[in-house]
Amino acid sequence: SQLPTTANGTGPHTITYATPGNYTAILTGTDINGCTKTVSLIITVTTAPSPPIVSNSTYCLNQTASALSATGSNLLWYSTSVGGTGNSTSPIPSTSTIGITTYYVSQTVSGCESARIPITVTVIAENTVSLASSNPTLCPGTTLTNITFTTTGATGIGIPTGLPAGVNATFSS
Image (cartoon, rainbow, N blue to C red; front, side, top):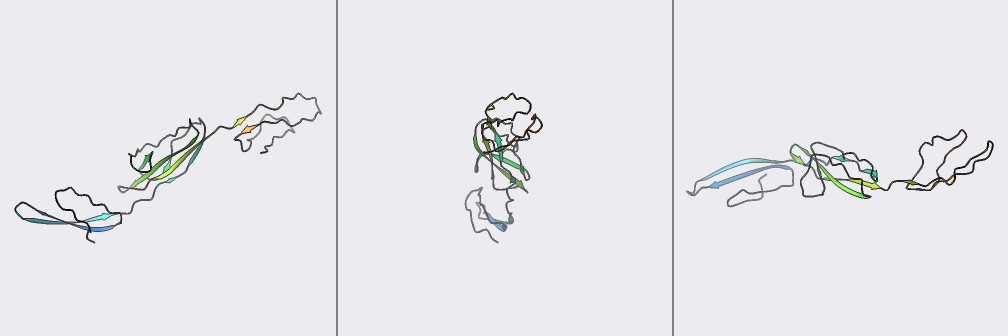
């Protein structure tokens, strides 16, 4: 189809198309003597690639973070959703402050850059555990009473170690 936009006067001229397809551009130039020259060319507008595939990350405060990753080709990383200059080096997020930081990444396929997609990094407070409620000394055959710990941010316990035979550890919220 013919380009529905014209540009007159001294160039360069920029015409932007968002709809994929083939367009015929007809360029006519007239010199100071009134002689004209017409040239036509086909402009192909391709479909933008899909954004890369990302996964959000969560870290504890001051935990060592890994470089962000995404699945795609020729990735560009940004700190804003629009504007700015992309960086091909994947950022390593800071974990020194609690909160959420959003990064953006795009991919470039066949010279066309995709839309940016957000990838969020959440930094949460570290779990805390209080001292034990007691440090009992028992005689053989004496019943052990519950020993409690107070936690902040814990959602369970790992595999308890160092417990004598017959002693179990449980978590209750």
